[in-house]
Amino acid sequence: MIEFVEGNDAVVRGAVDAGCEFFAGYPITPATSILTGLVQELPPHGGIVVEGEDEIASIGMCIGAATAGLRAMTATSGPGISLYSENLGLCQMGETPLVVVDVQRQGPATGSATKGADSDIQFLRWVTSGGIPMVVLCPENVTDCYSLTRRAFVLAEELRAPVIVASQKEVGLTREPVDLEAIARDMPPASPPRRPRDDDAGYLPHDFSSPTDVAPLSPLGGAHLIRYTTSTHDRRGLLTKKPEEIAEMVDHLRAKIDARADDIADAELDLQEGAESLIISYGVTARACREAVARVRAQGGAVSLAVVRSLFPVPEAMLGEALAGINRVVVAEMNLGQYVEEIRRIAPGHRIIPVTKMNTDLISPREIIKEGGLL
Picture (cartoon, helix red, strand yellow):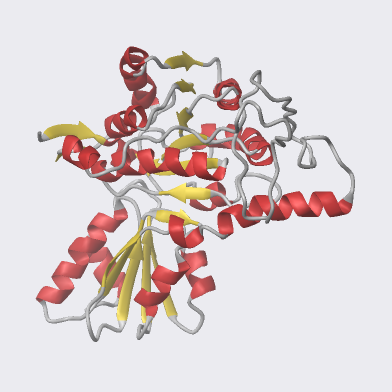
């Protein structure tokens, strides 16, 4: 059934269909309609929605719910994601599954509250101290808002880690005709969370045989003794100052995500034989890039396109395939040039051309063609 749906509503639907059981958030433009949408949609499915007194309280409640065994999500925008920073580190250290939707807007600080931008991209990667990898997914349209929200819940459970969906105002508040029911039919149903057996007397909350292992989550207050801390700890959750134990745990937090980078990777490649130019983009700007590619090809030019949906970990293998035979790489994004630094890192020897804008206007296909030197 074709519906006229905005991106934030699709996030709501995706969360409900993914089995979300708890949501807490604080109203903030342009993410507020996720909160108000879940107030309507989640309680009839047995879930709980709380409007927190502020952003810090909201993510704190979500962490509490997640450690108690509920599938939890929160949503905010730029100033709010800044306030989430410390608790996202707690999620990493406590190996807590949590989905965070960041509907980005023009920054810095309060910025332009009703205008979109890709303001938070590098902040989302390095949002916490410690440098532990962060999983960040990025929707281009309403369909992605639904499917990537559902995928975020799966990855959060599999990794026992926070997963961020980096939407933005132009994606979240734009309505499009879409058949979400058909999309849902093509996706696997929500699977039950991984839990240890209640009679597993030897259960350790942070156990692993190799650094890439992820222990099942036993809820606080359940059958096992669980210690939850923001400090460096051993496999039992006990605080430790032993360098070898600290190094082992930090390596585990990194390795469990890095080892799955190729599985997390999500990019759409539209490669043209003989093309020496490649456009790389994400989010709403990718839509202008698709039009730019069509115009270049219509005039006899050759250009390839890569639309990235999993920003972090960077889908290096997929982008490496797209970069083969390429001399010029155009990176289009609505900021001063953030993801372009990742492309420079993985594409040494290529001519990298940033096409950026940070005045709240969308980047046009004409600007991509002209500034990228594509015709």
